[in-house]
Image (cartoon, rainbow, N blue to C red; front, side):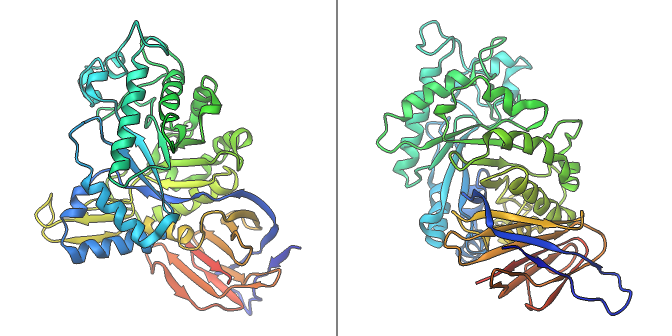
Length: 458
């Protein structure tokens, strides 16, 4: 049965326009794996903070967001690399989140010994992509590069993390295999081409190696830089899909000329077409479809990015059929996508401090109220600028409706009444205004311009 959310009558001409949202809890879509963010750099800044600030950070990052996925890096390209900081952060996360928390680990670079440049950094390749891939081999059982050695390194890396209490649930064998970066990277073409190793053969080798473990992690991929220009599809066309336990991509370009990350944050509809294209073939509950990294790439924190992220996620969980969304920075030194961390006398920091950014609240409107195994349910809005996505809990005992007013004027909306569900909790965040503020449940709601409102039932 479908109930309409009808706006309250307006007594006189006011600035708020009237909107109707329709929600059908019986029309279920994909299952939710979770919501997450990256703990990839600046781990030592977190552990360098004093205990009080550290605990406040953990409470803010994990309890406050109710995350279900944490993305980390595989840094064992340096065999002497200590994993103590990662272990401390994940221990604190699990103390707050329990077994719900899943770990996804991506590799940024193979060890120097496996690359022609003998360096983890792309800058050492001197502009020649052939120096930033795997070394060639005439004896490797998988192909013309050292795939078996790469796979063995992945297996021993996993075992090293497991020994530290960090057993990843999901791994991606290469972060952005198509990105010839200056920082840590290893290039893989979809298949061997122009002196570059093939992702297809690397996947086969890593899969074979990890499957010799008692409890191997699931491999997700191919995790390219963006989804424009059929980039994801080009990799998928060459690899053995059976070796993947899930699909992953980033959003740093969307194609059709929409390749500026900062602009796409303010124009999330740029992602709808390419996300829909991928979802039409790979979106299902059989293997999760996960957006594993994205940020604005802007130096400054922008208020508008809060609504931008919420809108991007709405596109992803509706048209994109995403099962999970992982933002790039859970935290960063001094200022970050979600949280800026400062340890006294580190960088420009004068004291231990955490700073919450606007995008933190965008994620919270989803992650705080929607747990793993919930399902997306059908929801629509009769106003183009009011974006909506809704979720039903695994026990069918609660519904969360997220309404994103992307317009520059307010909207009036009645309280949800869906098959006997009634909102008992409402929280709202406003651009350049109050964030994650509990508002009174009522027969009608005012959705301010450029705002996010989550209405949750029992």
